[in-house]
Length: 194
Image (cartoon, rainbow, N blue to C red; front, side, top):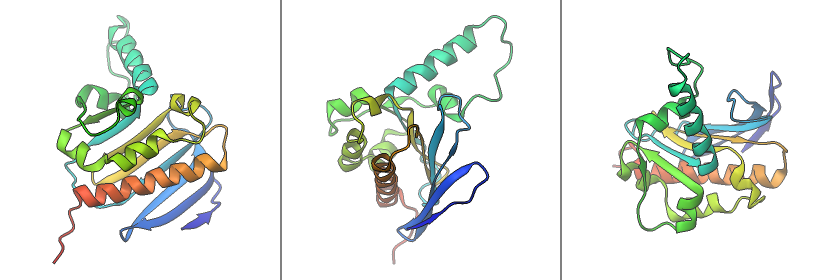
């Protein structure tokens, strides 16, 4: 793992490899209206099934985005879709929420999982990843912090509010993201093993 301080609106970035594939996590100014202050954002070039689309979002954020979408679509003055809508908002309309046995009911109460196929979600979200998502250092208030973990176009992404910044949350976010990359590679990899 390597640390750099690039500037230009980014406070720092961490880079590493999972299964030989690169990932990067950085702290910087948020480009999403639902994240106040700084955010942690990560991207892993993990080379998994391009067709797999899975979004894990904490329930308070899902509820908030659904309310906002409803307000926008029912506003009689609004005649076109706002091009600045975050991609996550479009996902709420495109993909159904999925669930399955095997994960704790407390997980399903705190998180929503939307996916193109339930099989893709269950191949990625294993019990160990669900447990990591339930054990943020600042529980229970951490459950209210906007958080998204997603697989899209063969890559893994993380977005979360990181205000106030603290080392335990950074360490845990890194652990969550690298484990998510590992489980995606294990369950959805397109690599051919000879």
